[in-house]
Length: 143
Image 1 (cartoon, rainbow, N blue to C red):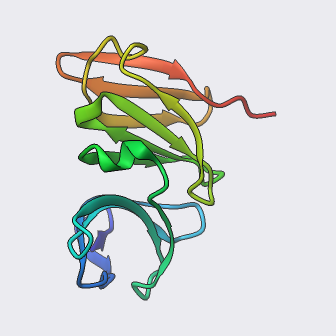
Image 2: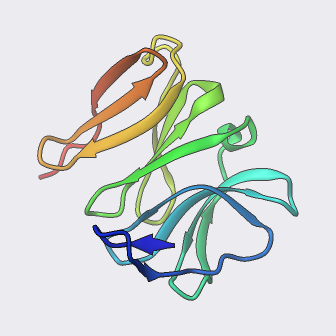
């Protein structure tokens, strides 16, 4: 469900029956980028879903996606997707086609588990909320 600033429901998207969402954000094109469990396959995935609930594309190609919970998602104005891979202490950076671009690993995160993400478009900074701390990364260089 999507709500306006006053709490009124704007729209509701019916996801496929096997999709158990953890988190979702709206992309610059109006689709939803969702982290979820595929109940049928019993694995975590990232999917782009249109407003009719149709899956447009998925990210399942990384060995990291098999390690556990893909928690929080953020997206920039170009459709790049940032994923907090909480239990493996990684952050995945995907392009707008959900292809892996880069990975911030546990050493760069000082073995902290990333729980929340906030991307600052103007500065290119990714703020990462960890247990008891906040990390900041310059992740994308826009020209």
